[in-house]
Amino acid sequence: MPVVELEDLPQHTQPGTPLAGLDLGTQTIGLAISDLSRRLANPRPVIRRKKFTFDAAALLAALDAEKVSGVIIGLPLNMDGSAGPRAQATRAFVRNMAEKTALPFAFWDERLSTVAAERALIGMDVSRKKRAARIDSAAAAFILQGALDRLAGLNAADRS
Image (cartoon, rainbow, N blue to C red; front, side):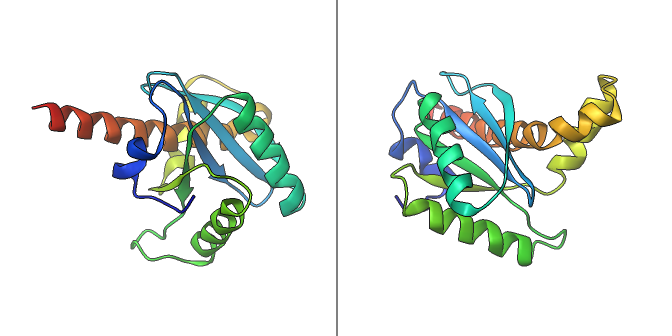
């Protein structure tokens, strides 16, 4: 399935199924899964990156196990809103994934999600070593939660 706008994602997914959030790093893929009502994002263990074919297989297995019907992936834009090399790499990853799955993908501006995730982990008094292992999944949860909140806001506006 092609990339869809976030606002159109509910039309391309089954109601009552979770959505996934991804934070694509150079060494890991942070993963978060929503609850069935799509209100809360829950971090999952990171996927260690090796090579695209292995990364894709591990990611698809995780998404299948969670019965996910759509994916929101963080788009790492520069602070001025321009797309740099990391944003291009993220778009290339999604293009390659689209050849392997029918799941719809939507991009979400991830600026400062890792900073917010780190602050939250520090606030919970998580040690530096444990933070390093959890930061990408926590960032994925921030990305997914932001998108879920946006979708809920759009849904509420449609009902009024």
